Amino acid sequence: MAIPPPLGLLAELTHRCPLRCPYCSNPLDLERRAAELDTATWLRVFDDAASLGVLHVHLSGGEPAARADLVALTRGAAQAGLYTNLITSGVGLDRVRLEQLVDAGLDHVQLSIQDVLEDAADRITGLPGAHARKRAVARDVVALGLPLTINAVVHRGNIDRVEAMIAEAVALGARRIEVAHVQYYGWALRNRDALLPSAAQVAAVREEAVERARGGHRGTLVIDYVAPDYFARYPKPCANGWGRRSLNVTPSGKVLPCHAAESIPGLTFWTVRERPLRDIWERSPAFTIFRGMDWMREPCASCPRKSVDFGGCRCQAFALTGDARNADPVCTLSPMNSLVRSIAGTERGREQTPAYRTFARVPFS
Ligand code: SF4
Ligand code: FES
Image 1 (cartoon, helix red, strand yellow):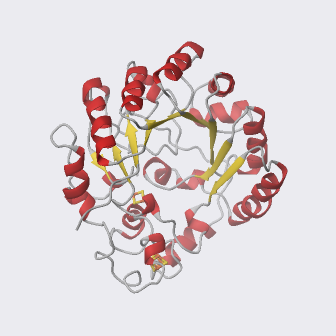
Image 2 (image 1 turned 90 degrees about the horizontal axis):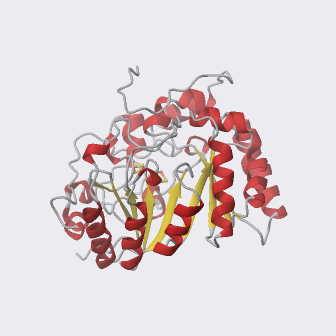
Image 3 (image 1 turned 90 degrees about the vertical axis):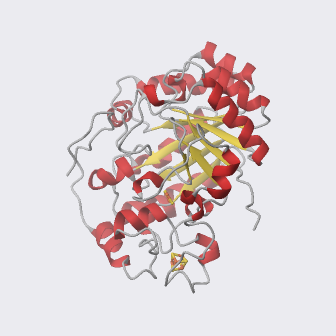
């Protein structure tokens, strides 16, 4: 059977980052600089991706600006015919570098903000001055005519300021904001007790803050809202289905079906150092294992929603139930859903110190 091509490639150019956010989507075991792909290999990956059918590349990290060759990589991706989206913290960019990126063919910038209160924002990033730097970068991005999306990651510490973050995105000249609750994998899973909001907070954001802001900013700002899994009735169609629409290349060249796939034990990831991207996409065991729906067990196997959400998230199923073949336990039809309800329903104190992301091995329990 012919495998339809992926549409998007997440290129994790590096895991290095000046920020240390405790909900970072990178794996707990970060890849070091010495293991990173060189410029020529990345350029080949972009050419391979375009021939495979990929339409857009997300230049991400870590912080992609930590790569000295970011401009060359952007130029190579644009010349390959890919739509180029830079996903950045902003730290490491300045006006000159942004001008070079525009000249190289950069199409879009996605900039994260952590809060509207400078001290709270800087505290969660672990980097004093980070928020002011981001504001300056946002203004430069807009002044250079690049479309700007603001990524606002929401957790218990900032959830009461979602409307203010949306207003900040408007003030910065963004065309779109993604208000996305933390997803609990990797670092965020380790820090879940410090990050998970209460059901009442989540309801207030979904039903009041976001709807009110959508009404107020209609025609000016697109507001995308990513709901928190733990309070949902059904899971999200994670990665739009495993091995179906997108792939991730890690800094060292491993090709993953989603950013957290390495958290599932027993999967072997082929690398772009050794094989062409097409071969990996079509034949790699890590892609074929959960591609389609034949792998599903009940209740997913006979569920009418299986072609809508693909059984939810394999990584979450493994993290919470110990078996990636189970239905995502976020689903109210899952026999293990009570586990998620109990986590979501537990009252937590407001002030808990999360573990910051670090390259050092952390003695987590
Ligand atoms: Fe989705 Fe499986 Fe739940 Fe059905 S049972 S809604 S396919 S996770
Ligand atoms: Fe891996 Fe959802 S993050 S399938």
